[in-house]
Image 1 (spheres, rainbow, N blue to C red):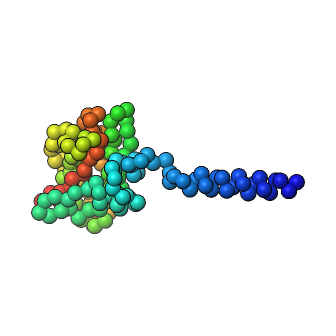
Image 2: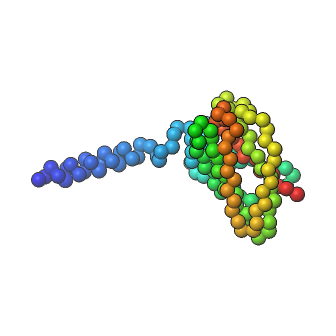
Image 3: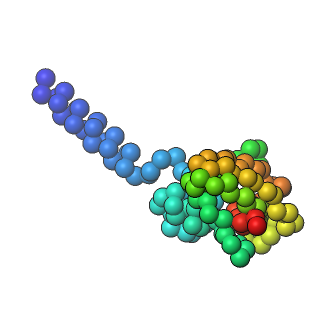
Length: 145
């Protein structure tokens, strides 16, 4: 019966070693389902910094809290959570800039889309890539005066 504790110990060691080799179910070159290439992304904050650009004279006073991606068929689907932690209404404009596997534009430039965020609110902006050439994106946000 001394074999049982040894078997349990070996099984536990195997499970720990197997689980420690890869974190989550993420594919190589992806973080939170989003393509990242060779970038070092270890948190949601890192992903937001890599995928968001603020433009315009007065950038909006909002926080991009979360970006998550998945695929629908062969199309990239992106969800961006925008948070207005102020008490005032915040008006902003956004668009996505789509890139192909080489980093070149994969679609025509989008037009700006308006969003109004009430005080202390969150809104999820969801979109699907315009074509199957898209392999990456940048979320561009600008304050609306």
